[in-house]
Amino acid sequence: MKVEKIKAAANIGKGFSGEFLDFLKKYQVIGLAVAFIIGAASTKLVTALVNDVVMPIVGVLVPNGEWRQAVLQVGPVKFLIGDFAGNLIDFLIIALVVFLIVKWLMREDATQKR
Image (tube, rainbow, N blue to C red; front, side, top):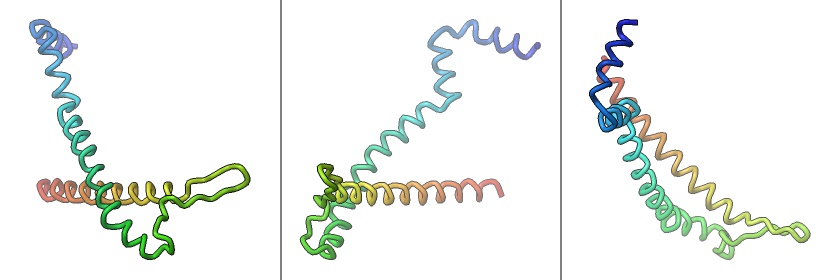
């Protein structure tokens, strides 16, 4: 009870800007924003890697080379199988990169605790 009163008394003099700064620190909003921006930039990088490096290799293995335009037609419905496959490959590469980064960061954290 006393701790809550002390915290409340400490927040009285801060005002809106102080409370906002506490919010940013407590919930690590700046780190989240940086991660979001880096994630958006890495998405472009991975898409370029897939389109410029991986897909030409896949294109050689596919007879006509235009596999992203592959369509499966069932009656009047057209399924864009090639587009889905390309997006699936993009996702798997991004997921692998994120996994490797998190694994590397956790290894660094684990060595600091020892």
